[in-house]
Image (cartoon, rainbow, N blue to C red; front, side, top):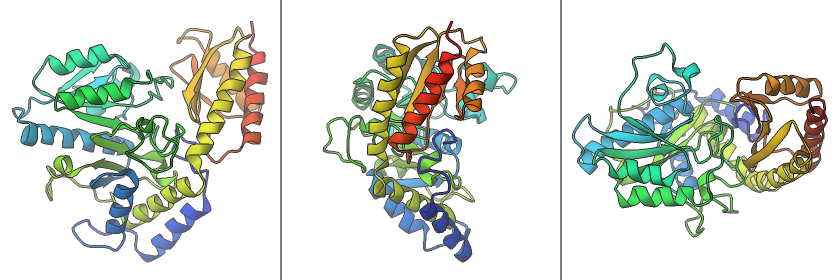
Amino acid sequence: SAYSAVNQGHCHPKIVNAMMEQAKTLALTSRAFYNDKLGVYEKYVTEYFGFDKVLPMNTGAEAVETALKICRKWAYEKKGIAENQAQIIVCENNFHGRTTTIISFSNDENARKNFGPYTDGFIKIAYDDLDALEHAITSSKNIAGFLVEPIQGEAGVYVPSEDYLAKAKALCEANNVLFIADEVQTGIARTGSLLAVCGNCTCEAKCEKQPSYVQPDVLILGKALSGGAYPVSAVLANNEIMNVIKPGQHGSTFGGNPVAAAVAMAALDVVNEESLSQNARVLGKLFRSELQKYIDTSSIATLVRGKGLLNAVVINDTEESDTAWNICMALRDNGLLAKPTHGNIIRFAPPLVMNEEQLLDCVSIIIKTLKQFEK
């Protein structure tokens, strides 16, 4: 699914048709001028996710950069942090993109090496560690925000403790720190709910009545926001945060263009109409339970973990080994495409339109392939 961009399936006709029809009418205007798609999209997407405002961008990394800028500006103008002193807390082993600012707080040397000098203003803490978060927040009066992936995908599909996000949000709220959720990969039904911060919510659209829902102060979306048909990303926040951005202070030539707006609305329609969250939830449980039966007796695979249809299998070898890569090559030969992450972990993130028969076919191929590598 192209790192969860194609949740709605490849070339979904509703999304493709929306793109084609809009492209025949109007593809781009400056955001300094009115067009009849941007406002409609802004109303649609803010109501869909339950926020006052959206700032449309193109790529996930752009959206993360936008969220960081909003957070810092809010810190100076609303929280009263001295200019250029704001700090943002991030997690070790994060993946938020590859721009210069983002790699500045990455600990992936492959992404960082020889791209410096790096941007200051970030504090790295361990993921899924509330004590570390509390210590970081309370150790400085200059903490502006906490940027976190609800599930760390690129790091190997690390799912945090069940109460981690809710307690992290409570810590942020108690200390006037913005909770920024990067749902570029985990959002749009991937983990079995509309957003990973929805917890165990079973509805398609965000519902504040669900006790498991964690309301981010800033929500970052991308990838499947367009169904993979077009680069579309977005940053959502309520007025007291988003209104620090005034005309001319941030923007994008292509962000929120008419084609992007039409595509995103169609893509989100598909999530509702085809119950993709429910499908991901049901099939994800089936995937993990079927693979666990095999792993219980396996010497080559030690663990399957994930949520919804974002899952990973941990291979019994070191990160420096090529075993996981060789397994992926054998998977390819057996009819299934997958890719290692962090050396000894294989991530599985199929389009969410798959059915039970297709999923069980995939499980059969995975098990057949793993058997070839049993010691």
